[in-house]
Structures are given as C-alpha cells and as structure tokens.
Image 1 (cartoon, one colour):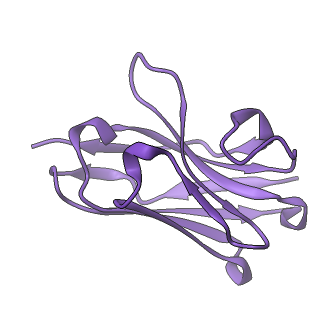
Image 2 (spheres, helix red, strand yellow):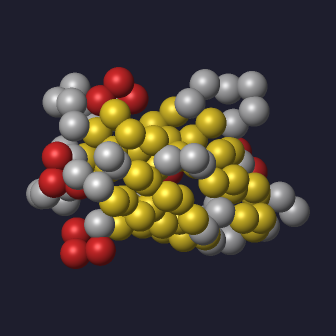
Length: 124
C-alpha cells in the first residue's frame, strides 16, 4: 500500500514563493519517479515537474523552467517542489504522483499512485 500526502499549498501574490511537499509511505522502493502535476479549473491535468527516485534526474515543463525546482529526500521518502516567481497562471490544484511504469516521467500514464492534491492560488 502506497500513500502520498501533499502539503504546503496556499494563497500567494504574483511574484511570491511557495514550497510544496509530498510525503510517501509504503512500497517506495518500487518507485521509478515522483512527479508533480496540476489541474486548473476547466483545464486538463498537466505535468509540472518530475524526478527519478534513485538517480535524481529532473524534468520540467517549459512554463516553469527557471522558476520551479523539484528535489528529493530519499531518507525521508519525501519530494519538494519549490515554486518561485509565481504567476497568476500557476493557480491550480497540485498533485503529487509516484510512478513504477517505464513510460516516461512526463507521461501521466506512468503513475500508479496519486495524492489528494493541494490548492495553490496566485492572486493579487
């Protein structure tokens, strides 16, 4: 049984920062990667950032490159997403996901396990 719990969402002004955390429990040794996805109202869920669980290689969608940083703490079975220079269009529910399927870190079909989501609202 795998459980993912996100925390750290909230309300922030444009240009501000937030740090999301994802705590994993259960069969974490089976993970290939952990990813962050987001879904804004009326839009499809999209990949934001991902990290390989063992090697630490990271991937980002173009719209967040240079602003967001994903990192992992294997000892704590946790992944963080540091979000800087936030924009209005970053407003969404952010989901942490863990994948064991070798279909690509940016592919949502690679992910077996999902957290409940945390709201990030960027507003002035």
